[in-house]
Image (cartoon, rainbow, N blue to C red; front, side, top):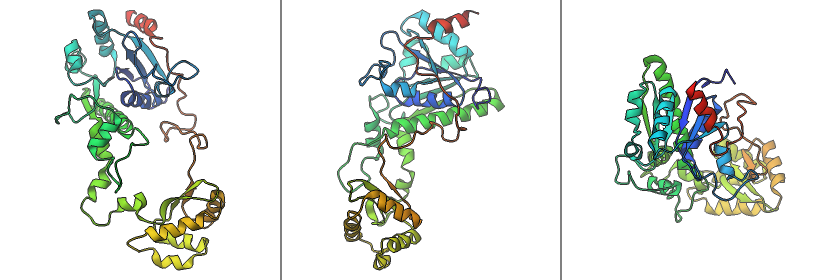
Length: 346
Protein backbone atom coordinates (compact mmCIF):
# COMPACT_ATOMS: atom_id res chain seq x y z
CA UNK A 1 0.00 0.00 0.00
CA UNK A 2 2.24 2.82 -1.32
CA UNK A 3 -0.04 5.60 -0.07
CA UNK A 4 0.01 4.29 3.50
CA UNK A 5 1.11 6.86 6.11
CA UNK A 6 4.35 5.02 6.98
CA UNK A 7 5.23 3.66 3.54
CA UNK A 8 9.01 3.66 3.16
CA UNK A 9 9.66 3.48 6.92
CA UNK A 10 11.76 0.50 8.09
CA UNK A 11 11.34 -0.77 11.65
CA UNK A 12 13.58 -3.24 13.48
CA UNK A 13 11.59 -5.09 16.15
CA UNK A 14 13.68 -6.78 18.84
CA UNK A 15 10.73 -7.13 21.23
CA UNK A 16 8.80 -10.20 22.36
CA UNK A 17 5.45 -11.25 23.78
CA UNK A 18 2.69 -8.58 23.50
CA UNK A 19 3.61 -4.89 24.04
CA UNK A 20 6.40 -4.40 21.48
CA UNK A 21 4.87 -6.65 18.82
CA UNK A 22 1.58 -4.77 19.25
CA UNK A 23 3.46 -1.51 18.69
CA UNK A 24 5.04 -2.77 15.49
CA UNK A 25 1.78 -4.35 14.31
CA UNK A 26 0.23 -0.88 14.41
CA UNK A 27 3.22 0.51 12.50
CA UNK A 28 2.94 -2.29 9.92
CA UNK A 29 -0.76 -1.56 9.60
CA UNK A 30 0.24 2.01 8.72
CA UNK A 31 2.53 0.76 5.97
CA UNK A 32 5.92 0.36 7.67
CA UNK A 33 8.25 -2.51 6.77
CA UNK A 34 8.83 -4.39 10.03
CA UNK A 35 11.77 -6.76 10.43
CA UNK A 36 11.26 -8.96 13.48
CA UNK A 37 14.71 -9.75 14.86
CA UNK A 38 14.62 -13.04 16.78
CA UNK A 39 17.29 -15.08 18.56
CA UNK A 40 18.20 -18.58 17.38
CA UNK A 41 16.33 -21.48 18.92
CA UNK A 42 12.65 -20.82 19.59
CA UNK A 43 12.78 -17.10 18.77
CA UNK A 44 10.04 -15.02 20.35
CA UNK A 45 8.84 -17.51 22.96
CA UNK A 46 5.21 -16.46 22.50
CA UNK A 47 5.42 -18.19 19.12
CA UNK A 48 5.45 -21.70 20.62
CA UNK A 49 3.43 -21.20 23.81
CA UNK A 50 0.23 -23.28 23.86
CA UNK A 51 -2.39 -23.30 22.53
CA UNK A 52 -1.25 -23.82 18.96
CA UNK A 53 -3.22 -22.89 15.86
CA UNK A 54 -3.35 -24.81 12.56
CA UNK A 55 0.02 -23.31 11.61
CA UNK A 56 1.63 -24.70 14.76
CA UNK A 57 2.05 -21.25 16.31
CA UNK A 58 0.29 -19.53 19.16
CA UNK A 59 -2.73 -17.65 17.72
CA UNK A 60 -1.90 -14.51 19.74
CA UNK A 61 1.57 -14.54 18.20
CA UNK A 62 0.16 -14.88 14.70
CA UNK A 63 -2.30 -12.03 15.32
CA UNK A 64 0.41 -9.70 16.64
CA UNK A 65 3.04 -10.45 14.02
CA UNK A 66 1.15 -10.28 10.75
CA UNK A 67 2.82 -8.33 8.00
CA UNK A 68 6.34 -8.70 9.42
CA UNK A 69 9.54 -10.33 8.23
CA UNK A 70 11.43 -12.63 10.60
CA UNK A 71 15.21 -12.62 10.78
CA UNK A 72 17.43 -14.65 13.11
CA UNK A 73 20.29 -12.72 14.72
CA UNK A 74 22.40 -14.05 17.60
CA UNK A 75 23.34 -11.00 19.65
CA UNK A 76 25.58 -13.25 21.71
CA UNK A 77 28.26 -13.30 19.01
CA UNK A 78 30.08 -10.51 17.22
CA UNK A 79 28.79 -11.47 13.78
CA UNK A 80 25.22 -11.04 14.98
CA UNK A 81 25.98 -7.73 16.64
CA UNK A 82 27.66 -6.49 13.47
CA UNK A 83 24.59 -7.47 11.46
CA UNK A 84 22.32 -5.56 13.85
CA UNK A 85 24.54 -2.47 13.66
CA UNK A 86 24.38 -2.59 9.87
CA UNK A 87 20.61 -2.97 9.88
CA UNK A 88 20.26 -0.10 12.35
CA UNK A 89 22.26 2.24 10.12
CA UNK A 90 19.67 1.76 7.36
CA UNK A 91 16.55 1.61 9.54
CA UNK A 92 14.25 4.39 10.68
CA UNK A 93 13.04 2.89 13.95
CA UNK A 94 14.24 0.26 16.42
CA UNK A 95 11.89 -1.16 19.08
CA UNK A 96 13.14 -3.27 21.99
CA UNK A 97 11.78 -4.66 25.25
CA UNK A 98 14.83 -5.99 27.08
CA UNK A 99 15.32 -5.13 30.73
CA UNK A 100 17.26 -1.87 31.17
CA UNK A 101 20.97 -2.31 30.48
CA UNK A 102 20.82 -5.64 28.63
CA UNK A 103 21.63 -4.23 25.18
CA UNK A 104 24.50 -2.20 26.65
CA UNK A 105 25.99 -5.35 28.16
CA UNK A 106 25.67 -7.08 24.79
CA UNK A 107 27.59 -4.25 23.13
CA UNK A 108 24.70 -2.88 21.07
CA UNK A 109 23.34 -0.19 23.37
CA UNK A 110 20.81 2.22 21.93
CA UNK A 111 23.06 5.25 22.47
CA UNK A 112 25.82 3.66 20.41
CA UNK A 113 23.38 2.69 17.65
CA UNK A 114 22.01 6.23 17.46
CA UNK A 115 25.54 7.66 17.49
CA UNK A 116 26.29 5.63 14.36
CA UNK A 117 22.88 6.49 12.85
CA UNK A 118 21.75 9.95 14.07
CA UNK A 119 18.39 9.68 12.23
CA UNK A 120 17.48 6.44 14.03
CA UNK A 121 14.49 6.56 16.38
CA UNK A 122 14.77 4.08 19.23
CA UNK A 123 11.93 2.97 21.49
CA UNK A 124 12.26 0.95 24.70
CA UNK A 125 9.29 -0.79 26.27
CA UNK A 126 10.07 -1.62 29.89
CA UNK A 127 7.88 -2.93 32.69
CA UNK A 128 8.12 -0.60 35.65
CA UNK A 129 8.83 3.12 35.92
CA UNK A 130 12.52 3.68 35.24
CA UNK A 131 12.87 6.07 38.18
CA UNK A 132 11.27 3.65 40.66
CA UNK A 133 12.63 0.85 42.84
CA UNK A 134 11.31 -1.87 40.50
CA UNK A 135 13.01 -0.58 37.35
CA UNK A 136 14.93 -3.83 36.87
CA UNK A 137 12.35 -6.20 38.33
CA UNK A 138 10.52 -8.82 36.24
CA UNK A 139 6.81 -8.43 35.69
CA UNK A 140 3.80 -9.08 33.50
CA UNK A 141 0.59 -7.25 32.69
CA UNK A 142 -1.21 -8.12 35.93
CA UNK A 143 1.66 -6.80 38.08
CA UNK A 144 1.76 -3.51 36.17
CA UNK A 145 -1.99 -3.11 36.55
CA UNK A 146 -1.72 -3.99 40.23
CA UNK A 147 0.97 -1.44 41.06
CA UNK A 148 -0.77 1.29 39.05
CA UNK A 149 -3.98 0.90 41.08
CA UNK A 150 -6.14 -0.52 38.30
CA UNK A 151 -7.23 -3.64 40.21
CA UNK A 152 -8.70 -1.80 43.21
CA UNK A 153 -11.27 0.45 41.57
CA UNK A 154 -14.31 -1.25 43.11
CA UNK A 155 -15.42 -1.90 46.68
CA UNK A 156 -14.86 -5.64 46.42
CA UNK A 157 -11.56 -7.51 46.44
CA UNK A 158 -9.14 -6.96 43.54
CA UNK A 159 -9.91 -9.12 40.52
CA UNK A 160 -7.79 -10.43 37.68
CA UNK A 161 -8.20 -8.15 34.64
CA UNK A 162 -10.11 -9.44 31.64
CA UNK A 163 -7.73 -7.74 29.19
CA UNK A 164 -3.93 -7.16 29.17
CA UNK A 165 -4.56 -3.42 29.27
CA UNK A 166 -1.08 -2.43 30.45
CA UNK A 167 0.51 -4.39 27.60
CA UNK A 168 -1.85 -2.96 24.99
CA UNK A 169 -1.74 0.60 26.34
CA UNK A 170 2.05 0.48 26.34
CA UNK A 171 1.98 -0.66 22.72
CA UNK A 172 -0.34 2.17 21.70
CA UNK A 173 1.66 4.83 23.55
CA UNK A 174 4.88 3.54 22.00
CA UNK A 175 3.40 3.65 18.49
CA UNK A 176 2.11 7.17 19.14
CA UNK A 177 5.54 8.26 20.35
CA UNK A 178 7.23 6.75 17.31
CA UNK A 179 4.87 8.46 14.88
CA UNK A 180 5.44 11.77 16.70
CA UNK A 181 9.22 11.23 16.56
CA UNK A 182 9.04 10.52 12.82
CA UNK A 183 7.14 13.78 12.33
CA UNK A 184 9.70 15.70 14.40
CA UNK A 185 12.55 14.10 12.46
CA UNK A 186 11.02 15.40 9.26
CA UNK A 187 11.71 18.91 10.54
CA UNK A 188 14.96 18.41 12.47
CA UNK A 189 16.54 15.49 10.64
CA UNK A 190 17.45 13.93 13.99
CA UNK A 191 16.20 10.79 15.66
CA UNK A 192 15.46 10.47 19.35
CA UNK A 193 14.83 7.93 22.07
CA UNK A 194 11.35 7.12 23.38
CA UNK A 195 11.05 5.37 26.75
CA UNK A 196 7.69 3.76 27.50
CA UNK A 197 6.90 1.70 30.59
CA UNK A 198 3.86 -0.49 31.03
CA UNK A 199 3.31 0.64 34.62
CA UNK A 200 3.12 4.28 33.57
CA UNK A 201 1.01 3.45 30.51
CA UNK A 202 -1.55 1.80 32.77
CA UNK A 203 -1.36 4.74 35.14
CA UNK A 204 -2.06 7.12 32.27
CA UNK A 205 -5.32 5.29 31.53
CA UNK A 206 -6.45 6.02 35.10
CA UNK A 207 -6.62 9.76 34.46
CA UNK A 208 -10.34 10.06 35.21
CA UNK A 209 -10.12 7.87 38.31
CA UNK A 210 -7.28 9.91 39.79
CA UNK A 211 -9.11 13.15 39.08
CA UNK A 212 -11.92 12.07 41.42
CA UNK A 213 -9.91 10.80 44.38
CA UNK A 214 -11.41 11.89 47.68
CA UNK A 215 -14.80 12.86 46.29
CA UNK A 216 -17.81 11.23 48.04
CA UNK A 217 -19.75 10.64 44.79
CA UNK A 218 -17.55 9.92 41.82
CA UNK A 219 -18.52 9.70 38.18
CA UNK A 220 -16.34 6.59 37.96
CA UNK A 221 -18.49 4.90 40.61
CA UNK A 222 -21.53 5.51 38.43
CA UNK A 223 -19.82 3.61 35.63
CA UNK A 224 -19.05 0.62 37.85
CA UNK A 225 -22.51 -0.16 39.14
CA UNK A 226 -23.31 2.86 41.28
CA UNK A 227 -26.35 3.76 39.18
CA UNK A 228 -29.24 1.43 38.50
CA UNK A 229 -29.54 2.76 34.96
CA UNK A 230 -25.95 1.83 34.13
CA UNK A 231 -25.71 -1.88 34.78
CA UNK A 232 -25.55 -5.36 33.32
CA UNK A 233 -28.84 -7.19 33.82
CA UNK A 234 -29.63 -10.87 33.35
CA UNK A 235 -32.72 -11.35 31.19
CA UNK A 236 -35.26 -14.14 30.95
CA UNK A 237 -33.25 -16.20 28.46
CA UNK A 238 -30.05 -16.05 30.50
CA UNK A 239 -28.44 -13.45 28.25
CA UNK A 240 -27.18 -10.20 29.73
CA UNK A 241 -28.26 -6.73 28.65
CA UNK A 242 -26.01 -3.70 29.13
CA UNK A 243 -28.25 -0.79 30.08
CA UNK A 244 -26.65 2.66 29.73
CA UNK A 245 -29.42 5.08 30.72
CA UNK A 246 -26.92 7.34 32.47
CA UNK A 247 -28.30 10.75 31.54
CA UNK A 248 -31.72 11.73 32.87
CA UNK A 249 -33.29 11.96 29.40
CA UNK A 250 -32.32 8.33 28.71
CA UNK A 251 -33.50 7.27 32.16
CA UNK A 252 -36.88 8.86 31.55
CA UNK A 253 -37.11 7.17 28.15
CA UNK A 254 -36.27 3.83 29.79
CA UNK A 255 -38.96 4.26 32.44
CA UNK A 256 -41.51 5.16 29.77
CA UNK A 257 -40.57 2.20 27.56
CA UNK A 258 -40.85 -0.37 30.36
CA UNK A 259 -44.06 1.23 31.70
CA UNK A 260 -42.59 2.21 35.06
CA UNK A 261 -43.23 5.96 35.06
CA UNK A 262 -42.94 6.02 38.87
CA UNK A 263 -39.23 5.19 38.57
CA UNK A 264 -38.52 8.55 36.92
CA UNK A 265 -38.47 10.32 40.29
CA UNK A 266 -35.85 7.89 41.59
CA UNK A 267 -33.16 8.97 39.12
CA UNK A 268 -31.34 11.03 41.75
CA UNK A 269 -31.49 8.53 44.63
CA UNK A 270 -28.10 8.35 46.34
CA UNK A 271 -28.42 4.63 47.07
CA UNK A 272 -29.73 2.75 44.08
CA UNK A 273 -29.25 -0.89 45.07
CA UNK A 274 -32.96 -1.44 45.72
CA UNK A 275 -33.90 0.20 42.42
CA UNK A 276 -31.39 -2.03 40.63
CA UNK A 277 -33.02 -5.09 42.20
CA UNK A 278 -36.42 -3.97 40.93
CA UNK A 279 -35.07 -3.46 37.41
CA UNK A 280 -33.39 -6.87 37.54
CA UNK A 281 -36.67 -8.53 38.51
CA UNK A 282 -38.45 -6.81 35.63
CA UNK A 283 -35.86 -7.64 32.97
CA UNK A 284 -35.83 -11.30 33.99
CA UNK A 285 -39.42 -11.53 32.73
CA UNK A 286 -38.48 -11.37 29.02
CA UNK A 287 -35.63 -12.43 26.72
CA UNK A 288 -32.76 -10.03 26.13
CA UNK A 289 -33.59 -9.48 22.45
CA UNK A 290 -37.13 -8.44 23.36
CA UNK A 291 -35.84 -5.79 25.76
CA UNK A 292 -33.15 -4.65 23.35
CA UNK A 293 -35.69 -4.14 20.56
CA UNK A 294 -38.08 -2.30 22.86
CA UNK A 295 -35.46 -0.01 24.37
CA UNK A 296 -33.70 0.83 21.12
CA UNK A 297 -37.03 1.84 19.63
CA UNK A 298 -37.28 4.30 22.53
CA UNK A 299 -33.73 5.59 21.88
CA UNK A 300 -32.38 4.09 25.13
CA UNK A 301 -28.68 3.10 24.95
CA UNK A 302 -28.43 -0.66 25.43
CA UNK A 303 -26.77 -3.74 23.97
CA UNK A 304 -26.79 -7.47 24.54
CA UNK A 305 -23.45 -8.70 25.88
CA UNK A 306 -21.95 -10.53 22.89
CA UNK A 307 -19.41 -13.32 22.92
CA UNK A 308 -16.33 -12.86 20.74
CA UNK A 309 -17.82 -15.33 18.27
CA UNK A 310 -20.94 -13.18 17.98
CA UNK A 311 -19.18 -9.83 17.78
CA UNK A 312 -18.00 -8.48 14.43
CA UNK A 313 -14.34 -8.39 13.42
CA UNK A 314 -12.54 -5.11 14.05
CA UNK A 315 -9.47 -3.65 12.35
CA UNK A 316 -6.35 -2.93 14.45
CA UNK A 317 -6.60 0.70 13.34
CA UNK A 318 -10.28 1.67 13.10
CA UNK A 319 -9.49 4.91 11.23
CA UNK A 320 -7.80 3.13 8.32
CA UNK A 321 -9.89 2.90 5.12
CA UNK A 322 -12.02 -0.20 4.68
CA UNK A 323 -9.78 -2.96 3.37
CA UNK A 324 -6.83 -0.97 4.71
CA UNK A 325 -3.42 -2.52 4.59
CA UNK A 326 -4.01 -6.25 4.17
CA UNK A 327 -1.07 -7.80 5.99
CA UNK A 328 0.61 -11.09 5.17
CA UNK A 329 0.39 -13.93 7.71
CA UNK A 330 2.87 -14.04 10.59
CA UNK A 331 6.29 -15.29 9.45
CA UNK A 332 8.01 -18.51 10.34
CA UNK A 333 11.01 -18.21 12.63
CA UNK A 334 13.83 -16.80 10.49
CA UNK A 335 11.79 -17.06 7.31
CA UNK A 336 13.34 -13.95 5.76
CA UNK A 337 16.89 -14.14 7.14
CA UNK A 338 18.61 -15.03 3.87
CA UNK A 339 16.62 -12.54 1.81
CA UNK A 340 17.46 -9.69 4.19
CA UNK A 341 21.14 -10.65 4.38
CA UNK A 342 21.25 -10.84 0.58
CA UNK A 343 19.76 -7.36 0.26
CA UNK A 344 22.38 -6.05 2.71
CA UNK A 345 25.18 -7.39 0.50
CA UNK A 346 23.92 -5.61 -2.59
